[in-house]
Length: 254
Image (cartoon, rainbow, N blue to C red; front, side, top):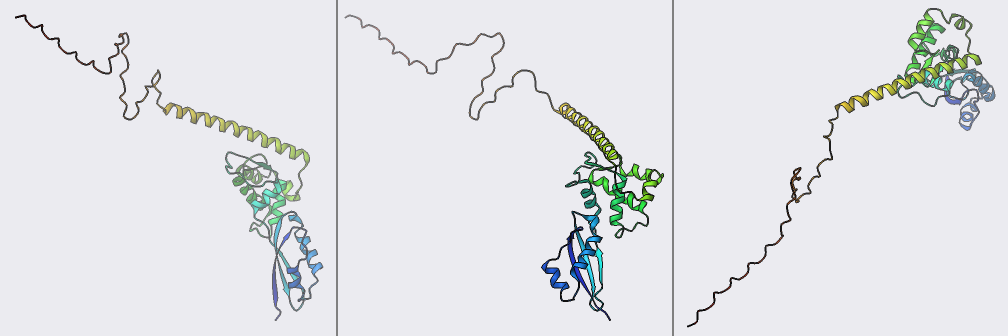
């Protein structure tokens, strides 16, 4: 019974190169390494610029090599396609990009071996659903409205032809849609902020007119404020004058 050796690799899409680790594993099995790498690069060419997991299953008797190419998560493929470093932290309030159905078809074809959906149309709808959590518009709208358009046959021609490239005119149109939505969300955010500030101001008690009375320091007696129209009292002496000695009565002459 033939035995199969499994070798795990992590390669850059379309640019796999031989390294010491791969040579140590395939060399003793007398496998043609350049030929294997050529096949790996052919299978991973669609993932250019991304790190892709690859598994090699080598038949030790026949020397046949089976290549299984993994794929990054859909979210990573979407970010790579749209050149986004990360998704939106508030996807309902912030939209970062606007993706075309042609780009969704491209990603669906990349993931077709790993997805359970039977048709390309279903796969495209599933990938569109992942756009919401990243703050990505789909053809200028949300994934729910887009799915309704797909079900209604709006994109049947593109799906049947499996078009994966977007024209320059359409890219310009997608950007204009994104800008319009971003401006609308900005105005909504400003409106919500103004309303919140108004509510907070109404709930804050208003101070009485006039300057607030100065608080007395600890241990210090606070003087009462003078009554309007009253004359200021003369300052009282701080110390009482010592009592003068009484004069003695003159003695009578005898």
